[in-house]
Image 1 (cartoon, rainbow, N blue to C red):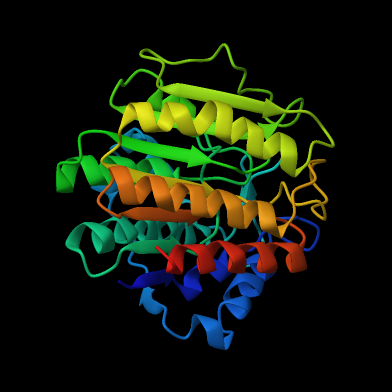
Image 2 (image 1 turned 180 degrees about the horizontal axis):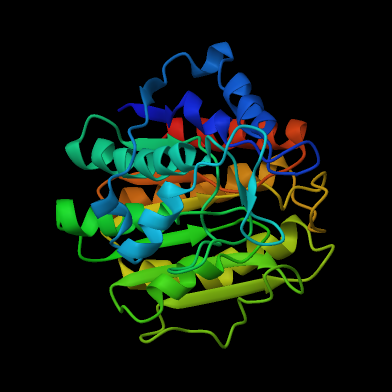
Length: 310
């Protein structure tokens, strides 16, 4: 079966300025890595723009329309908070990022791909229903999850997240719905200051496994093997979506976990196996963080290599 890569050049037009860590070069590095000969069998698709209807399943319509209407003049970005800004191309980039996640769901549900990777920016897991934050405008993984439910009738959807930062936005969108599952490993203490084990959701559908600064592969694998993966299996999702952030890499400058490429290969393999068993061999992955360009490119390549073995 085929793995599909979904992206769009418009995601490069989200201009965050010269000193911001979430730069277009991140996506360029990932896409360059995926041009290697070993990835020649990837299907490659252009991401559509998510519709207002798709986005409004997780964000209030007024919020969606406000974000899409922000198109500042070239060279004059609008600062939304201390970390998050929008340039002239940001609204389209954000809509394409969420649209890529929805297209990834369509690909695996229609059956022409078994796994899908949305290589997009801006990332999404910090975006709350009414609030952009942490470089994120729309919550791409959550939009994809509700797309799967509404369009494809998937009742129980899981999003799992190995970004170094907790996905506060995804948790906020899922915690009151017993048929949505969110699990995260992340550094704590660290931005955004959420993601404690006591945060469990309305039906134990939220699972947080915080890691200490300087934790490496053994602690990461234990958190997933002993806490997250058993809970994911017990939830029995019909579709598995991965918030794939690579900023837990030892080389990343924004936090202090110590993962290496074999750790990303291991977690990808574990998640593919669960998708094989519980989700009819359907798995969707959406790019989140990762801010050292070489580490990001290498880890993303390891991840996609694992998806291609699905």
